[in-house]
Image 1 (tube, one colour):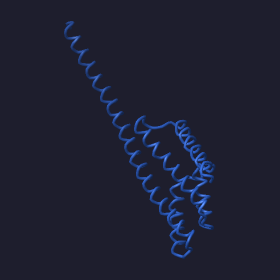
Image 2 (cartoon, helix red, strand yellow; image 1 turned 180 degrees about the horizontal axis):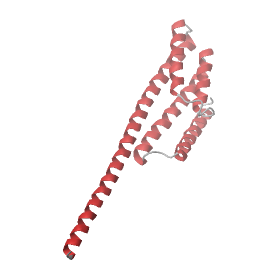
Image 3 (cartoon, helix red, strand yellow; image 1 turned 120 degrees about the vertical axis):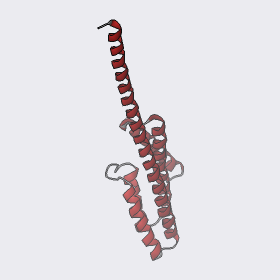
Image 4 (tube, one colour; image 1 turned 90 degrees about the horizontal axis):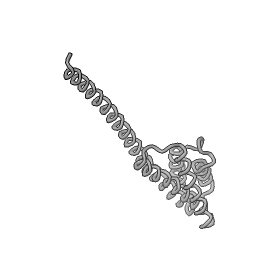
Length: 168
């Protein structure tokens, strides 16, 4: 075989290998990006639902502080169960999820303005962690467990400082 033919065959094989590698990494990047988009959309939908249910629960609880009629009690319990199902108190019993569930139970038994204020602040912190997580994942991709813990700890500390500031 001539040298030109050997160079041509090797160039052809090299070109095919380059196309295959480029295609593989392009597909891998697309799948990674698609997964991130699906997760982000799911988290946005979760956050919207969480905010809606939280707002309804707090509104009905506020009504119960002033007027304890049966319809308000029924609605409050309905929203309480919805809110509890959106949380994960088993995984985070010492963080806001566990604390939120305890406050919900307390407010169902005795609707108090001070407990409601603290719950609203905690629900806002919970929404804040979700929103910051969504935005950071949009910029950096999937957050590591270490980054998630750091973010949660920062926001939980902000919540605790806020509660001290407003004397809750």
